[in-house]
Image 1: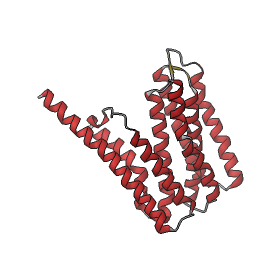
Image 2: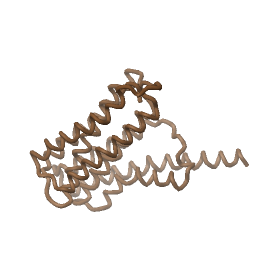
Image 3: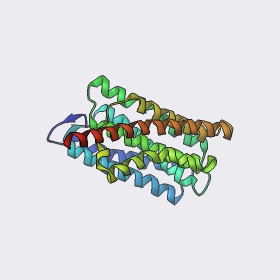
Image 4: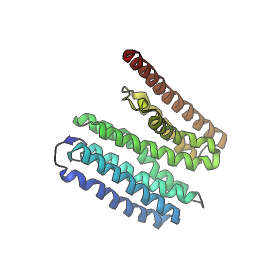
Length: 243
């Protein structure tokens, strides 16, 4: 990811360590709050799937060193596994809101750290950015599923948008073109995460929490919409150039 080479070296140990750390985290969470079988299954499934994909990415990139920035993202990913377990448990029974908030808050806060570390150390890579983005996306999906149970299923759109965009890329391959860097995407993702965390915490009246979630959804629609417009224009230009 951050240092490329033919040998994978110690970098390939990171996914295994992440799975082990995640399982220990699930055990710790279960000691505080009862995790349902669904919660255990969802948490473990996320750990296995995310780290298998990470291992494949590391192998493809030929990374020999995992790097501090990726270690921060891996920590966030482990926290997302715990959030996922709690959210899945919450589908069939109550979960301690303070615990959910206490795990989610650092997962969101660390999103500002991994990119900073990568830039400061000059080790930013496409794979590291993709790793970060996918962790962000799944955290939004989990949180939106949790909040939707109280505010309405429209909130789930906040977490589903990223995956609808991915499906569109399978249907129309030209939508997989590399998008130009845009800091606004990170800002919108952060705002959406904070809005969902506030809504999940229950500290605000339902109407205000719904308003925060609605603002987050509008911002995400604008951000994704801008990317789609850019992709459509580039596709048309490419067709004109070929024709």
